[in-house]
Image 1 (cartoon, rainbow, N blue to C red):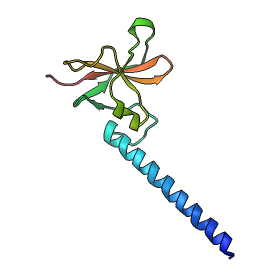
Image 2 (image 1 turned 45 degrees about the vertical axis):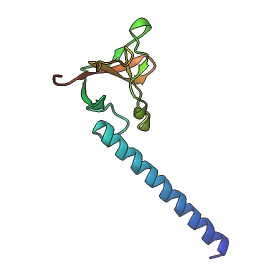
Image 3 (image 1 turned 180 degrees about the vertical axis):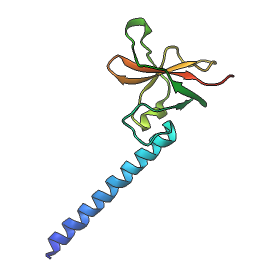
Image 4 (image 1 turned 90 degrees about the vertical axis):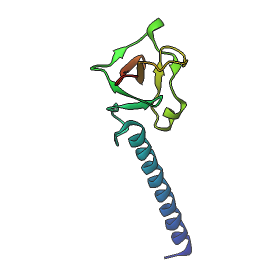
Length: 115
């Protein structure tokens, strides 16, 4: 094998290894944040504001004044899921947060347990 071919094969192996590590880190982050390995399905739980939220029965379409506009957490961008709430973060923990699915479709998650 020529030296150029060896360099090209070595470079390909390095890029493939970096891609595999990146995918592993993203899947592990999704598992840590949402309790599920699959990043393409809505999670069975969301940990936000040091509380645990569980999903509602079905997704809802929210438009106009009922559409949540306040981003709940910047840390959620790590996994690529946007989580919103209807009111700005204050001294109270929101009882409902919304996972943005697509367009105006959101999946509501309710706070579990008591105070």
